[in-house]
Image 1: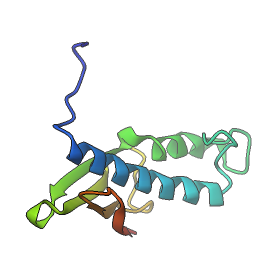
Image 2 (image 1 turned 90 degrees about the vertical axis):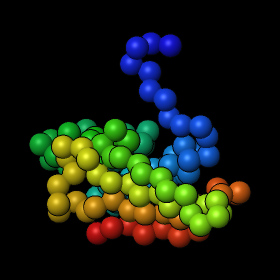
Image 3 (image 1 turned 60 degrees about the vertical axis):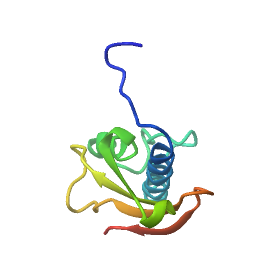
Image 4 (image 1 turned 90 degrees about the horizontal axis):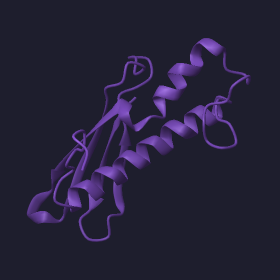
Length: 117
């Protein structure tokens, strides 16, 4: 392992966190797609309707490194509460505030999702 390797955790909380992160990034991508910012490959569209000065922000919005994932076990180990919190330089107050997701502990289905506006 390289010296910059990071331990993620023993298991199920990593899966729950990843599911919450994916669900939140799907929301962000849908928002950017509605604005005409996404390219066919899912990246940010160069030369599209979005002004060039906003492209770096949009690239930051879809980067998982721009968010922290917090995972808390629910009562009696029945699932997980996942909170995705914006931490990147691009996450301005006007963009929104992340979201929270209840993830089932057995099926890892999202039982409840709330995007913070």
